Length: 87
Image 1 (cartoon, one colour):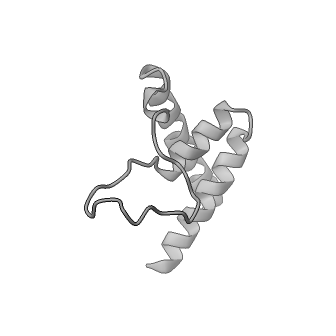
Image 2 (spheres, one colour):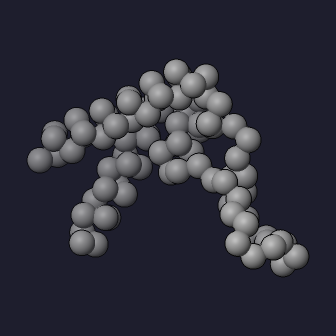
């Protein structure tokens, strides 16, 4: 089962990396990825700031040399196990 899970997550990560390579990483830029709790109460209600998905954040971190592919896989596996156990 673990071998199947690792194969699946490797495939998803590889496909997403290819997507970002084909788009020159343009969707990894110009997003507000501020995770701080600060919020401007003057912001109009209903306007959402764009944020990256978790996998895209991990891929961006790997491009900055902060994570390896193995690190990304471990994080994705953790979330997949958590979601699987939730349902």
